[in-house]
Every structure is written in C-alpha cells, then in structure tokens.
Amino acid sequence: QVQLSEFGGGLVQAGGSLSLSCTVSGRTSGSYYFLSWFRQAPGKEREFVAGINLRTSAPYYTDSVKGRFIISKDNAKSTVNLQMNSLQPEDTAVYYCAARKNNYYTSYVAAYDYWGQGTQVTVSS
Image (cartoon, rainbow, N blue to C red; front, side, top):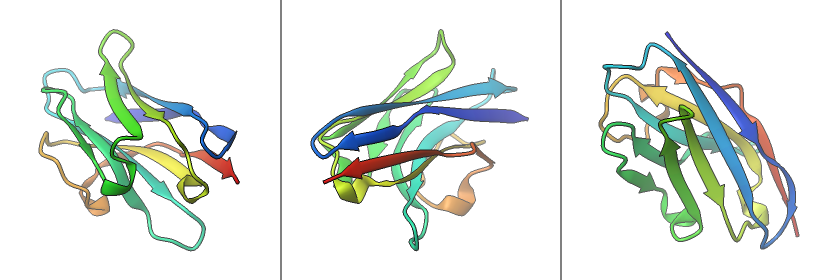
C-alpha cells in the first residue's frame, strides 16, 4: 500500500510562483512506480499536469505547463515536488498527487492506483 500526501498550494497573483510537494510513504522500495500531478478545476475533468519516473527521473509535462512547471524528486525526503512558475488564472485548480504501480508514462487518470487528498491552488488576476 502506498500513501500520498500533498503540501503547499495557496493563493498567488498571476505571474507568481508556488511549490507543491507530495510525500510518498508505504511499500515503494524495490518496485517501479510512476508519480504524477493532476489538477481539476471546477466543472472540468481531472487532467494530467506533470509526471516523473521514480526510477529514471525522466519528466513528462502537458503542453500548457512546459517551460513553466518543473517536476523533481527528492529520494532522501521521499517527496516529489512541483515547482510552478509564471502562474496564470487558468492554473487555478485542486492539484492531486497520484502514483501507479508501473514505471511507464501515462496521462490516463484511471491508470493510477493511488491518490492524495488534493491541495488548492488559486491564481488571482
């Protein structure tokens, strides 16, 4: 079993930055996992934002955040971080950390096995 807990988020003005962290705990050692950040705005479907292969550290991004967001992992702290720069009002959403028991990339929501509780990010114009 894997537990995910998100930290960070909050309110920021357009053009500002925020950092999110996802703490990973449980039976992850010796297994291949892929961890991603998703977001869901009111009235919209949950969408993939960024992901990282926990074995190779290869990152993946949706087009709308390329060049603005950076996903990284900290093995010592068992966290995966999402640095969000140049935030825009359209980035406003609840951000979720998710993990799948497979180290291949996918943006498909249903492919993920574990989810965090979510953290709110609000960008004011």
